[in-house]
Every structure is written in C-alpha cells, then in structure tokens.
Length: 501
Image 1: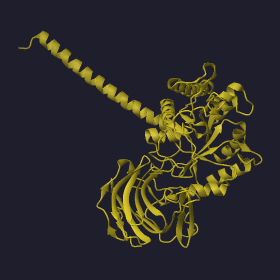
Image 2: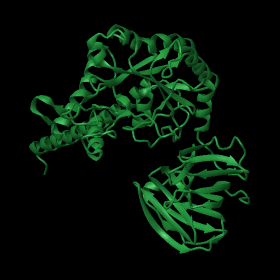
Image 3: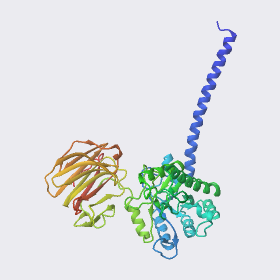
Image 4: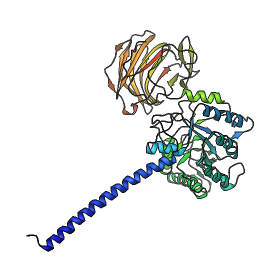
C-alpha cells in the first residue's frame, strides 16, 4: 500500500528526473547553439559565396607600390593592370577570415579565389592600392610591423591610418612582426641573423640564450604583435601571421634547424590559426583543403611580372581535371608543368629533362593535380643518359611513389619524408624506350612495363593517399642525365572510356 508520504517521495523523484533530463537537454541544445553560433560567426566573417570545397587558393604577396620601377617593388601602373586583369578573369578576392572559415569550419570558397597580401605596413602600399580596390570592389590583407607604429616611422602607416583601413572593410590587418623584422646579434664577433631562426647572443653575459629563453623570446614577440593590433584597432580579429622574410626557422645559423623549425612553429600555432611562408622553390604555390595552416604558401609578385604573366601563372596552376592526355607535346604544353630543378624544354614533340652543369638531374611535376587519388598514369619514356623516375601520388619533392628505370633494372618504390624505400626490384633488359604504367587504387600501387605486369598491387604509405604526377632524370655518377617524355596519359580509375593511346 502506497502511503501519502511514499507518494510524496515518488512525486519528488519524478520531478527530479524530469528536471535532470531537462537540464541535460538544455546543455545539449546550448552546445548545439554554440556550435551553430560559431558557424554563423564564420559565415558572417566569410562574406563570399562559396561554390567549392576542393579548390586551389593562390595567395599573392606584394611589398611596396612605387611610381617608377626600382627593380624590386611593383609599379603602380603595373599593379593596376594586374588587378584589372584579375577582375576581367573573374577572380574573387578573399582575406584571412575567409581562409580561416574554410579551414576551421568547412566554409566553401569560390572556384577562382585569390588572396592579395602586402607585407610591412608601408604607406605606399595602402595609398596606391586603395583607390584601385575601391574601384574594383577588391579586398586585401596587410601584414603589419607594429614596432614601426611604436617608433612613428613616417615610411610606415600610423595607427590612425590602420584604423581607417580596417573600418573601410576592404583591408584585413594582420600580424607580421614587432621587433622580429630586424636582424639580431647571433655571435660574439658581430654576426647577425634572422630573429626567429637563431638564438640571440647576449652581449652582457657573453653567451647565447638557452632553448627556453629562445622559446620565450619568440612567444613574447608573437604575443606583442597581436596585443598591439588589438589594443589600437577596435573590433579587429587577429588570427594570422606572415613570417618576416618567409623565415619559419629554416634559415638557422647558430642552432640546428631541426630544433628551430618545430620550436618556432609550435609557438606560432599556439597563438595564430594561420601563418604564411613565401614560396621560393618555383613549385606549385597554391593552397589546398588539406594544406598545413601553419605553412600556407604565398607567391611573391616581383617587379618584372606583368599582368599577362600573372594571369598566365594563375591559369597554369589551376586544378587539372581527368582525363589528362598528351600524345605529343607542342610548344605551349610545357606551361602546365613546373620544374623544381634542372632543365625542362620541348624538343621533337617530347619534354626533354636534362641536368644542369655539375648537377645530378632534373625534375618536373604537373600543376593542379593535388586532389587526384585513384588513377592510372601511362608514359612513354626514352632514356638518353642516366636513369628515369616516373612519379605518381606526388605530394611534394619529398613525398611520392615512383618507378625507377636504369640500365638493366626497374625499381618500384616510394619516397616518404625525404627517405627512399624500395617496394620491388626486378631485372629489366635495357631497350632505351619504355611504355610505363603506374596504377593507383586505395593505398596500393601496381606497375606495368610495355603492357607486362611487373608486380601485384603493393601497399604504399598512407601519407601518399593522393597527389599528382611527375618525372625525373637522374645520374648520381657523373651528373649527365637526360630523358625524353614522349607521351603522358592519366585516367581516373572509375571512368570507363577508351584508354588506347
């Protein structure tokens, strides 16, 4: 028999359960609201109408804009022509907030996105670019050296000008340096070096700073830039850094770069969501969906690049669709490839790769193939001197799968983190010219030579899940390497069209 007292406790128990369920539901809803709010905030920051997730994003880097050519900076007239050319070719300008939303929240970007950036916070950049941007409806990013505002250097923008830029909505003001744009003392005999790559020489104590002092100096520098910008520009959102001189530790002189690079990048990542290097290798300068947000690439626009050159460069590096079939190479078909080292030129309907004097070889890779994954690469190669590498799943110069052909041997392998690993090696009768086929499905590679299989599918490293194609000429003995690539065809493995070449 349920007494009145028991009924009371049962009612209280039911009410507590209901309250608990409601509270749990509240927190779940609150969490969902917070997540949604973040996405809404990202969308508000990211005003462009996104159309694609798999895009290639070029980022242009300028320094000053000058009236007359000085051999370093871009002239105002040339810059205006470049911006008009971007507009006429339907490029959409984005900023660091758009990129952050793309990488952090999965926002989509226009298929022809481009980010225009300036380093240092120079007056000539702002005053010469602003009327052009206002006319075209463009926006840009200024990576500022806040120490110059503290010094009131008249060559650089002051805080009032930076606030006006921010308020216009056309300029995204982000971090570049405080003191870190200047070289520091790195040795007892007056040696100097880059701020971030090296330990500072402490003159008063006649020693280098310790690893902890080095890390602390970097943290102080990076926090100070952000603090300066946020304290002086109301409403600013600082989440991006452009490395001064493109230096992220790789130019270390008095410290092992294996210590400098991770130390610096880890400090940067703890403060900034995005950071930008300078592409100086001549290779693909685009950024992709899976790019390292701590090492986003920028292409430095120098004084000799015309509007026509710039558009050509951007078109060359756009995403390449499959199938890609070149049965014979004409004069203009080398433009879609980038040469990392050595020589590449068209001769007799083929791409010729040859080593430079005192070098061991040459390498080219196809632009725009970053997102390729399951495909078959066919190539007809003639070896004139040395050996040939046929490359697939090319991520960068240190990560790819390859078929290496030399006199009397064929080797199937992979290069991961700069280290070569042999997967299979078999004897091969030397014949000078070969039809090579590399087949990629999932995490496996298979190779055929002259339509004869030399291997069953062999597993490759998961880091090589996708990537493009390329070729190397190589001769480690005397450096005289030369090959001819007479045909290239790449087919998506899920397509069914005729693959006869």
